[in-house]
Image 1 (cartoon, one colour):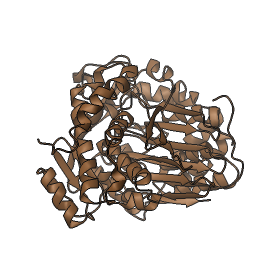
Image 2 (tube, rainbow, N blue to C red):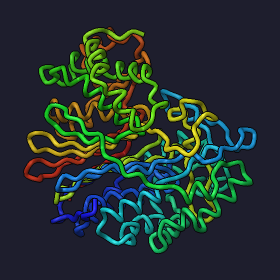
Image 3 (tube, rainbow, N blue to C red):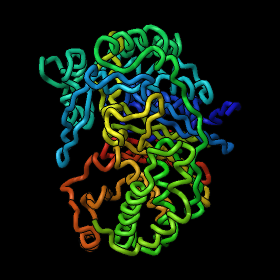
Length: 523
């Protein structure tokens, strides 16, 4: 993308997981910045306002589409270290996260840290697509970090879920302990991260070299060497953002640009959409028994196909061809009419008045509990994420971009509507995005209605069901999936899909997912 896109006016829409990030991005649009300026601004604010979900020490993806139709996927997800240390030399320990209705084990410590990509991704996207100075991009986050932000109720809940991580070290407790020796900052309390503000400001002035081969890199490498981590100077200095062609699919005449491999979330969504493409879902009642049981079976069949084709063992350029093989899709589509028997991520979507669109998803795992001294940055724990380490915690291949379920997605429908969307939620990302896409395209729902619709999720043979489905639909789902659970209330477990949209005349609309504190701002 050599031609730098610009916003032609100060209109557009932002959907994000925190109101402060969404507002900061909206102000960038109002000043004439483009969708990519706005997305990067929201990312920086998220590092302050959503500390469990976003960090300069994590990784992510941005799908970009310019007003003239050029599309590119920026992969700045984490990379495995070049030289793994033996397990007995590592700082690597388990902790429990409590989601209320579900519990999950994660691993933290320096031995769980993979090479971070967010800082380098921030600068790569800005160089290619940004129009405002980097000082302007980071400015809202710098102010919020220094002056402090009241903790939103949902962020307080998320911190509570991973309390064991954010109170695991004295350095983490100093930032997030709420002033108590063993406490944790709560809803409404002021979270101040002045060192992070200083770091963002220094990065804007000095560039990404500060993180990857400068003072920050020196501190990370020294602590890993003596404290049980894998990362070396070669890991940080050698990290590169990868620019990829999006995975492009047609669904009901809509052109979808999806996050490509090695991310797995996008290709799994594409497989499910290929299955559903042979069913006239719009002939069913939205949210009715036929609609949701068909979608649930597509989810289960996608899981089955994923197991049948061990995607983690394939070269990146072979993953899409292997799973989207028409014969494999057809074989599974034939089963749609039959019963099937028996992580932390945030997202920003932006469309500006010129028609540029950005879908950005980032994750820090849940955080490693290690704070880079003097920076306010908690590094990721991606080497301790079971979902993205299928060969075991000691079995990852060296110096390779890690797989992810993150699936930022862009869509253009035949009638001129455009959507930018994505979600947090680990394994639930792909099913959350799939359902919202179906609601937007098959049932022509508004973004708000599509995001609000109750969700389901299939994992193995088990079906999880959010409240709000009609009784006859619940009965049909229970019959199709004997192993099921009806959740008592809506939950962040089912993802947080944030949608930015525009119609053929450029009128903007959006929806932030309340499951994850999302908001949308139309400029």
